[in-house]
Length: 274
Image (cartoon, rainbow, N blue to C red):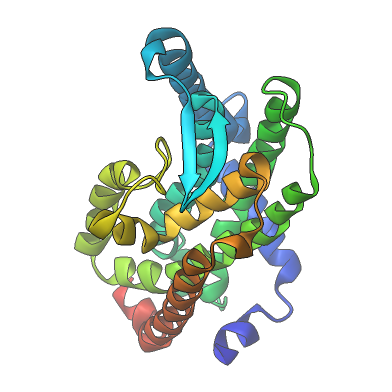
């Protein structure tokens, strides 16, 4: 961990500039450029809005129980919207993060540049888009869904940094391993194409018992989807469901430890591999 912090020292400005350039480079040649990073998720949300508001009306609203507590009933699209916003960041962080070192190999093989900062500016680029989409989501909730602003909304400033750090730490493992093996990178892409349906983005992950309940509890993506809903529509504090918080903190510690181990194990041989 000290090695990673050391590599980031004096590179704060460069990380922010490279994060902006990452978005520009990805959409180079397009008329609206980096705005495509926002257009794509907005179109996805429009499709779901049309499907669940206009097309499939009989699904009704989502009635949420957490334990024995009746949290309330929510419009289905509003419920899904708040889950989708962290999902867009998560899926981009995992897929683009896994490819980050391979796609930026010039910083590893030709320039004396701290390798760990490649994952950081890749994640920061995704964070720019996420903050903008979160702002649009908040406007929709207030002016369309008529959700009143509340002090619970401030939890965004807890969940968002936690989500950024969690998936950045995950990149410390996935990016070097993907640089060593395209099979590992392809495996991640294959998993992400189906993992969406294993998370509580379009349904209530609390509404299960037995083994499925514990499976949902172990999924960190559910922690963030539920966390954003806690902040914006459930109006609950993050400590009100302590089991979910404890499981996440244990997973977070493991991901950091595993990420540091993998990064330090592989970083010195990355130039030769690439």
